[in-house]
Image (tube, rainbow, N blue to C red; front, side, top):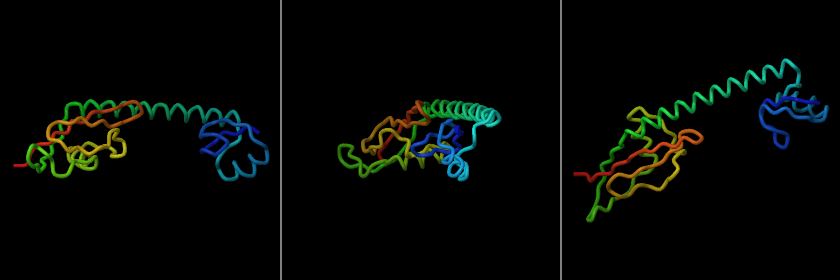
Length: 148
């Protein structure tokens, strides 16, 4: 029996896939648990509509990520830190602190999406990369200056 998967099912397929499975498995498990529906002309049309909506949604998310990337390019995040002789910084600036500063500016970035997660521990400007969407990488300029 051919079914359209509504959820990811291990060793069967991903959401939206049309798969051929045994009749009993389809009726007694997949359809009964709500993991799939039987493939019919109506269900195929609904699947096509859902895939189109998902593609539009993904395009919108990518566009928002591009706009955020452009916004981040023109932005410098300032940090005042204590430092000792020869410009050595006491402590360091982590991605969590960068996210907090950005949220104060009204910009929302997920701290798990940072590509280089090493803490910043030198005075001056450092560029930190963050993946905003698949294939869209933004650069955040972080400037550390000495506390007076």
